[in-house]
Length: 242
Image (cartoon, rainbow, N blue to C red; front, top):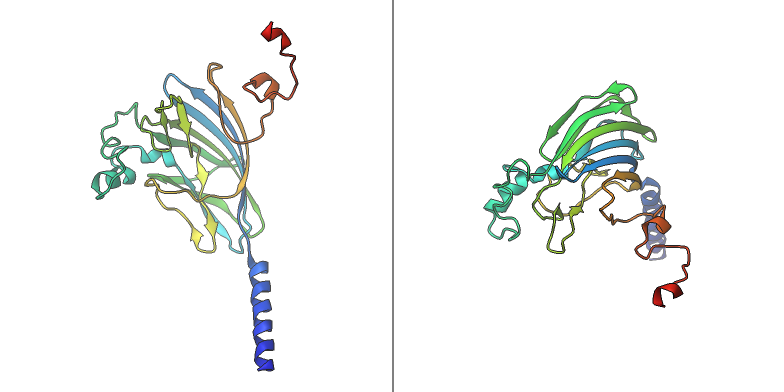
């Protein structure tokens, strides 16, 4: 019995040590510049991406999500919304009936690695990028991506002017790297389910008309200019109540 206990303890610690040593996850850094045109409900995106391959595998291509392409007639989300037994009452056939100026889209203009233009294939909500040089384990990939997007009118985690009169809901609005883990690439087309993405850092500059108030997560760089309760400088408000 004592020998069996020692064997089980050794096996437990060996498996625990192995699982800790073999754990890894990919990492990404997005630097993005956004030019927003509220008249057309469109915006241009320039991305500088640094993707770190922490896996033990050599990667010859990468994949990205283009979620806004789901908001188009004939998309997988549209077909699903019109065919399942219990469709989302907010959608049903609304996507199918959208006009061109009401749909959502993310159109990739170019993908570069340094000065090299990379070939890519865009189908639905998935972008496949063919690398000119593989990413070996522990190495980084630098990508420059230009994209034009349009916000759909349909409210489904994203959209224009919801019931709370929020002008634009901007969930998953940028080309987003698909996750690569022990099971490989997760290139599931978007049909209205939850998201799975790479852990990373974001540095985003948004150029938009000054009449808009932006809200989002992150570290506010100019709280005293923004106001709305974010000020760090104490103000003497006695004059306001005289």
